[in-house]
Length: 141
Image (cartoon, rainbow, N blue to C red; front, side):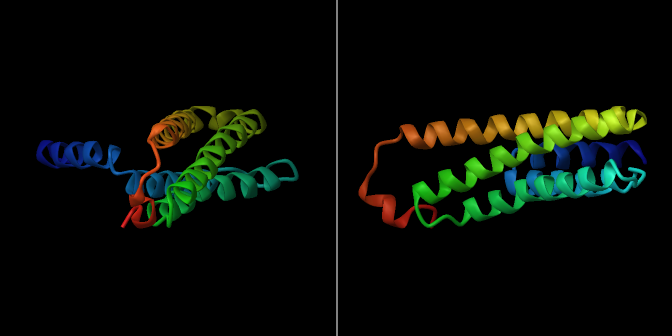
Protein backbone atom coordinates (compact mmCIF):
# COMPACT_ATOMS: atom_id res chain seq x y z
CA UNK A 1 0.00 0.00 0.00
CA UNK A 2 1.40 3.36 -1.01
CA UNK A 3 1.61 6.27 1.45
CA UNK A 4 -1.20 8.00 -0.45
CA UNK A 5 -3.45 4.94 -0.19
CA UNK A 6 -2.64 4.64 3.52
CA UNK A 7 -3.55 8.30 4.04
CA UNK A 8 -6.84 7.85 2.16
CA UNK A 9 -7.66 4.76 4.22
CA UNK A 10 -6.86 6.61 7.45
CA UNK A 11 -9.17 9.46 6.45
CA UNK A 12 -11.93 6.99 5.52
CA UNK A 13 -11.43 5.04 8.78
CA UNK A 14 -11.60 8.27 10.78
CA UNK A 15 -14.85 9.30 9.04
CA UNK A 16 -16.37 5.86 9.63
CA UNK A 17 -15.51 6.10 13.32
CA UNK A 18 -18.30 8.67 13.61
CA UNK A 19 -20.73 6.93 11.21
CA UNK A 20 -22.39 4.44 13.54
CA UNK A 21 -24.35 2.73 10.76
CA UNK A 22 -21.08 1.90 9.02
CA UNK A 23 -19.14 1.28 12.22
CA UNK A 24 -21.63 -1.26 13.56
CA UNK A 25 -21.81 -3.03 10.18
CA UNK A 26 -18.00 -3.24 10.05
CA UNK A 27 -18.01 -4.64 13.60
CA UNK A 28 -20.37 -7.42 12.47
CA UNK A 29 -18.16 -8.13 9.45
CA UNK A 30 -15.06 -8.28 11.63
CA UNK A 31 -16.82 -10.75 13.95
CA UNK A 32 -17.63 -12.99 10.97
CA UNK A 33 -14.02 -12.84 9.76
CA UNK A 34 -12.77 -13.61 13.27
CA UNK A 35 -14.97 -16.67 13.80
CA UNK A 36 -13.69 -18.22 10.57
CA UNK A 37 -10.32 -18.55 12.35
CA UNK A 38 -11.78 -20.54 15.24
CA UNK A 39 -11.27 -24.31 15.10
CA UNK A 40 -14.64 -25.98 15.46
CA UNK A 41 -15.03 -28.51 18.26
CA UNK A 42 -17.59 -29.39 20.93
CA UNK A 43 -16.67 -26.33 23.02
CA UNK A 44 -16.29 -23.71 20.32
CA UNK A 45 -19.25 -24.68 18.14
CA UNK A 46 -21.83 -23.09 20.44
CA UNK A 47 -19.57 -20.11 21.23
CA UNK A 48 -19.16 -19.36 17.52
CA UNK A 49 -22.91 -19.37 16.97
CA UNK A 50 -23.53 -17.14 19.98
CA UNK A 51 -20.80 -14.66 18.99
CA UNK A 52 -22.04 -14.36 15.40
CA UNK A 53 -25.58 -13.80 16.67
CA UNK A 54 -24.61 -11.14 19.19
CA UNK A 55 -21.97 -9.43 17.05
CA UNK A 56 -24.18 -9.02 14.00
CA UNK A 57 -27.21 -8.10 16.11
CA UNK A 58 -25.38 -4.97 17.31
CA UNK A 59 -25.61 -3.56 13.78
CA UNK A 60 -29.05 -4.94 13.00
CA UNK A 61 -30.59 -3.27 16.04
CA UNK A 62 -28.71 -0.02 15.48
CA UNK A 63 -30.00 0.05 11.90
CA UNK A 64 -33.53 -0.44 13.27
CA UNK A 65 -32.97 2.37 15.79
CA UNK A 66 -31.97 4.64 12.93
CA UNK A 67 -35.49 4.20 11.50
CA UNK A 68 -37.29 4.29 14.84
CA UNK A 69 -40.88 5.47 14.93
CA UNK A 70 -40.60 7.18 18.31
CA UNK A 71 -38.06 8.19 20.92
CA UNK A 72 -39.12 5.20 23.03
CA UNK A 73 -38.59 2.83 20.09
CA UNK A 74 -35.21 4.46 19.36
CA UNK A 75 -34.03 4.07 22.96
CA UNK A 76 -35.31 0.48 23.10
CA UNK A 77 -33.42 -0.56 19.94
CA UNK A 78 -30.26 1.18 21.15
CA UNK A 79 -30.61 -0.63 24.46
CA UNK A 80 -30.71 -3.93 22.62
CA UNK A 81 -27.60 -2.92 20.64
CA UNK A 82 -25.81 -2.09 23.90
CA UNK A 83 -26.78 -5.46 25.39
CA UNK A 84 -25.63 -7.31 22.26
CA UNK A 85 -22.29 -5.46 22.32
CA UNK A 86 -21.88 -6.50 25.95
CA UNK A 87 -22.82 -10.08 25.08
CA UNK A 88 -20.26 -10.01 22.24
CA UNK A 89 -17.59 -9.10 24.79
CA UNK A 90 -18.59 -12.09 26.91
CA UNK A 91 -18.37 -14.57 24.03
CA UNK A 92 -15.09 -13.09 22.81
CA UNK A 93 -13.72 -13.69 26.30
CA UNK A 94 -14.98 -17.29 26.32
CA UNK A 95 -13.46 -17.94 22.89
CA UNK A 96 -10.16 -16.45 24.06
CA UNK A 97 -10.24 -18.94 26.92
CA UNK A 98 -11.17 -21.87 24.67
CA UNK A 99 -8.61 -20.94 22.00
CA UNK A 100 -5.80 -18.97 23.68
CA UNK A 101 -3.99 -18.51 20.35
CA UNK A 102 -6.81 -16.16 19.28
CA UNK A 103 -6.66 -13.91 22.34
CA UNK A 104 -4.60 -11.28 20.49
CA UNK A 105 -7.04 -11.28 17.54
CA UNK A 106 -9.98 -10.89 19.93
CA UNK A 107 -8.54 -7.88 21.76
CA UNK A 108 -9.48 -5.18 19.18
CA UNK A 109 -12.97 -6.68 18.89
CA UNK A 110 -13.36 -6.55 22.67
CA UNK A 111 -12.29 -2.91 22.60
CA UNK A 112 -14.71 -2.05 19.80
CA UNK A 113 -17.59 -3.84 21.54
CA UNK A 114 -16.90 -1.86 24.72
CA UNK A 115 -16.70 1.44 22.82
CA UNK A 116 -19.95 0.76 20.97
CA UNK A 117 -21.70 -0.18 24.21
CA UNK A 118 -20.56 3.06 25.86
CA UNK A 119 -21.65 5.11 22.84
CA UNK A 120 -25.12 3.53 22.86
CA UNK A 121 -25.54 4.04 26.61
CA UNK A 122 -24.50 7.70 26.27
CA UNK A 123 -26.94 8.28 23.41
CA UNK A 124 -29.75 6.65 25.40
CA UNK A 125 -29.00 8.79 28.47
CA UNK A 126 -28.94 11.99 26.43
CA UNK A 127 -32.11 11.04 24.60
CA UNK A 128 -33.88 10.14 27.84
CA UNK A 129 -32.92 13.44 29.45
CA UNK A 130 -34.59 15.48 26.71
CA UNK A 131 -38.09 16.66 27.56
CA UNK A 132 -40.92 15.18 25.49
CA UNK A 133 -42.30 17.49 22.85
CA UNK A 134 -44.84 17.56 20.07
CA UNK A 135 -42.04 16.57 17.70
CA UNK A 136 -42.20 13.07 19.22
CA UNK A 137 -44.62 12.01 16.49
CA UNK A 138 -42.18 13.02 13.77
CA UNK A 139 -39.13 11.62 15.56
CA UNK A 140 -36.25 10.52 13.32
CA UNK A 141 -37.90 11.54 10.04
